[in-house]
Image 1 (spheres, rainbow, N blue to C red):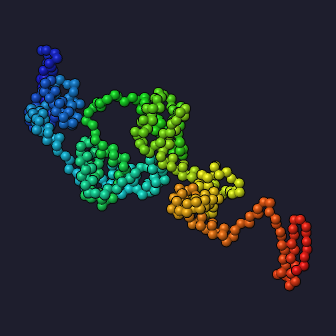
Image 2 (cartoon, helix red, strand yellow; image 1 turned 90 degrees about the vertical axis):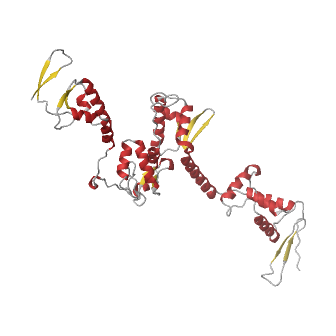
Image 3 (cartoon, rainbow, N blue to C red; image 1 turned 90 degrees about the horizontal axis):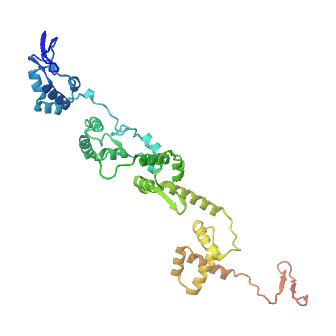
Length: 401
């Protein structure tokens, strides 16, 4: 077939074209014509709206072969809207079988019981928390959010969850971080308000965070030592501390002081270190032997209080016994002793009463100075004829009774 096509670029020039028997838009029985520049622009715009990729072939051409009815149908607004709204019917064989019990339904990550056993060994702030679907409404909110996102992640979630009638019965699971990220509202504005984010500060902050999270065996970090290993722009410590608090919140503790470098540690790790130190101190208190004959009252009162609280049965403080006995003898109040005992500065009321009863039954031997002493020896338990030997300080005398 031979066609004569007018070339608008070269006036009074004719081109002989052969084989133009196929419409670039549709293949049909209608008569074709040669589409020129104004019609090509409309066809390219329609192709971009339809997202069928035909505008790639049309761009850069001045004229192509298009049927009249095909072009009119292709650029019609109603037909474009219909083509965009139609969805392809899926068959059962096309639906993917997803393991909701062992994988995250949002990112397809591992969420099995074996994974949870491994994660539980990590600190709380570094665990990947896994949540189970507990309500039927969760599926509706999940699909609605996926449609509003209008991205590939939302499409994958719709394809994965859409064919499941009950996520609770399927024992669906998902990561907490994935849930926060998926349900997070996507801003439609291209530009955010306020000052633009500093890329160099963000890079330094990411380096600090990665250094802290990758060194799990350490409990404390010096901010200055971390920045010494970073080769780049180093922001001020004030900015980094503010960003660390904004990211980790109450899970992180930053200790600062005058002429001291900032020290970073996690709250859980700090409590673990304190508990370990407390266990060591408690063991040392229980295993140490104390001298109760010589002591300084002013310095050992607090120490005796701590030791008594740690080992109340095996340690009896003479300071607390003496103070409690003095208070009871002077005021005679049981309630006063109970209050002071609760504060940890004297013995209990029962211990003080027991001490007084012991003193009455077995009083201590008190030898007064500048007094006359005699030593009497008797052997009546051996012989009937008993001899008593009396020794005096002045003149020794033996007398038979």
